[in-house]
Amino acid sequence: MEAEAAKYVDTEKQVADTTDALNGARDIIAEWINENAAAREKLRHLFKEKATIKSRVLRGQRRSRRKI
Image 1 (cartoon, rainbow, N blue to C red):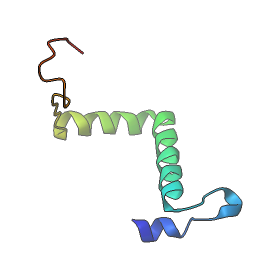
Image 2: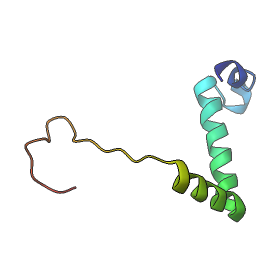
Image 3: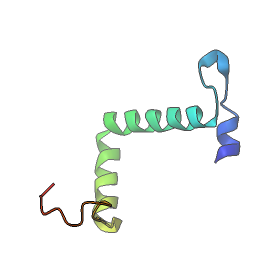
Image 4: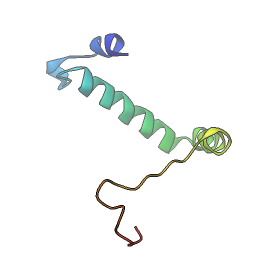
């Protein structure tokens, strides 16, 4: 993925490195999904069928009995 992202590094377009390129790509995808109801529905279905939710107690919070 880094090699592909490197193709989009362009300081004139304020894409300084591959991290910027990947963040920009994520932003574009998020915007597209936000504007596309069919894409949102497909993602909801995918997450409903395949997703696994995990949680853990944060370090230093094990003895705390407060709910977060």
